[in-house]
Image 1 (cartoon, protein in one colour):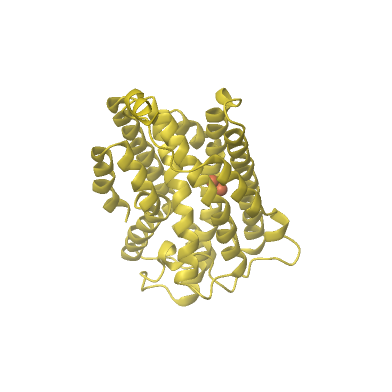
Image 2 (cartoon, helix red, strand yellow):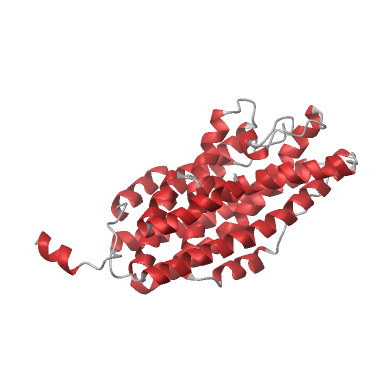
Length: 316
Ligand SMILES: [Fe+2]
Ligand SMILES: [Fe+2]
């Protein structure tokens, strides 16, 4: 009876946003193979840019010529591949730990999360193959933060709700990254564009499952515990932001090495300022302001959503 279920319902138990069965059906329909995307004659075209300008923000650096802008854009593309290997490597164990204790409760739920984890491992391999292809075709070495295992360990040590929210933010941001690549760039490398597209296709299911994951984790928590989880989300955000600061310095080094151009102090300062903000938007801000991420934050409480709204401009 409806009245009975309403009366016995815990105040923080959420109406599920998405169905597991629908998600697994969609996921089976999309499922692609790495070989469909890269390998053989499917190669990166280094005469083209890789990243959408909304993420790369190379045009703001007026002191660079077109070729230098293209090289920087490609360095940012390589960084994108590596950062996604880093984040997906900690998503896999979190998802498996989440579903493991309750495998027998709902077969569609178990299928959906195991498929999710399997797809993330496939994505890691896809990003690694793109990174190898980049290494083979790019003139010089590019430095990347890491090791990824240490970054993952540090993130997973946080409150489980905080980690689930960080994962949710990451999954939703991939949706906008592909849309950006078709919206504002016609001359991007088709292979890199196909990477963003195929990632988008499968992440669309992951984002829904992550939403359920957050709802499941939060359902057993008091408002004070939810607040603690959101605190942890911000701590993870700060940790990622420090990594991005380091990565921006590395991208500057990689740029100077690849182009042979030494920037003067004022140019370096401008480079770091613009590129750090571009990295913040790419890996934090674009997820934080995603309407679906904000909808979940609203479910956790108006005050928690407000905290996100207040922090978002830092990563814009
Ligand atoms: Fe992925
Ligand atoms: Fe994912």
